[in-house]
Image 1 (spheres, each protein chain N blue to C red):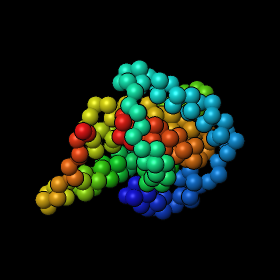
Image 2: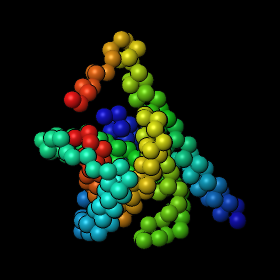
Image 3: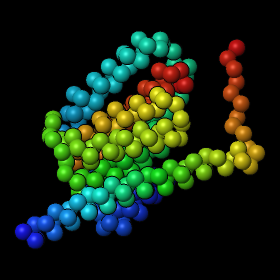
Image 4: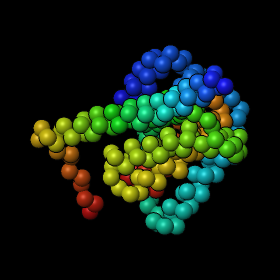
Length: 54
Length: 172
């Protein structure tokens, strides 16, 4: 019984750890991308002006 | 490129081989069959619905459409699929129960969470409510990855869907 409980707990821990890991990685990547996205405007570079159709 | 870099770095950390990221050959016949029978009809239905709701915008430049195909394949679909389906989905599939099976795949957290994070990522980078709808193609790409054992079918359908959406929205 002990080994089954230990295995269950390990499985639960692994699953929870995996979910936390992927959520953490996604947040880290998105924050990095957002910072990269915000750097040009912060430095005074603006997006090219779209030409309006005639 | 950050999607690719993070995916390969995480794979190295957890000791996964490239095939663990869905970069193997997988089941090529299943991939071709599902792309033809499931994904392309889904794209046709989406196109019809988009045209009915938003009207028709003629394509301005077919050259731009042709250029967008390799751009979407290599610079958008491939990195995103490697990250969301190759790394995230594989990691969750290995660690969590796959859930109730339907149409040959488990409909549990390993399929749904990457699709949710895929939609959340699109919404975070471009906060328009319509971006949350990427949850549904995310489910389709996850289904293709799970059924075929590789990300290639998802990459192809993802790129095709992006080009179609840009064309439908009059951006090309």
